[in-house]
Length: 443
Image (cartoon, rainbow, N blue to C red; front, side, top):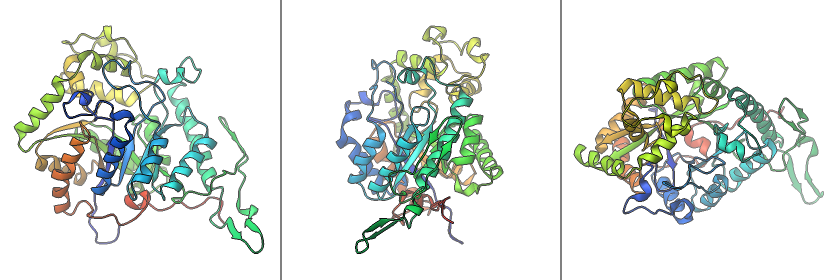
């Protein structure tokens, strides 16, 4: 940020088929087949770009979501979808979730570099280690690797991927027609990597990406996840239900980043917010009730059981979480999300029925019901109070919820000088104010 310039919000549009609320597909105006409708995704991407969002983001996991009975269970492969969206947009960043656990560094580094090239430097990678046992079953495993092992593998994966992206120096291609010399082999570097998890020769067969390497995003909030983010992440997606929890996480990530020898300002922290927006508070509450009344409790119960790796039968809807859940050891799966749910339930003394209602809109992300002014004031309070560098905007219904945020909340944020009127750069790194990383092979 240049001297004298006011710090500005970063906004990411977190897109999810008909919307983030589990019942969004049932709304009268929703497209229940939005999941595989490319026109729907293009409309969302263009809406976010017209509003000058830094980026859009696609979640993903290599398994069916639930059983398919109560909510759309499938999704397009995100790098394929982002490649299509890159041709329907020109400036907005494009971030995809891809698992390090169920990929190999060479193939994934190649695919991500390719997206960065075809998009003109707008690609980002949300690095996940895949918590679900159902995902492991799709790759011939009886269970997923342990939590610590998944992160250790991810750490080596990133080391290899970064080296592959650097394996072409900027001056490697000379394209000298007269001499018949296309590239300088001395500037195409072998890796010869032999580690605990990978053996990779290199170099990559794709030129170094326009951004040096795609923006690296991380979304795990466990202890292993936070340490991994401190070493590698350039943006962190996170879930918190209170300002106090978000501020503590923000301070922790910045401190860990500094301890890892990196600039804390080089890590952009973006909690999620699910905004229910109405012209009055009562109108906003009525909107939230409309969603809640469309929920199928059985679906919420199954999802809660999946987080805690147990059976729905252990829960009673009108009682608190059972002691067997509260007293169990750390899970090998989604540690931070299970901890968040337990904390929420204890702090607000919620029954299981109330818990699944609270999780229906954002799966544990911060839900806010109010007027455009109240939504804007809350965002500003978190931003200026040291709890966020910006937000993942998680509209409960799409495109209507994103359109409401763009039309009603953004003008307030712009009026306070906190969000851009126009893009100033062309790459995702430029939107986030982050430099192109140096090439480790360049002397």
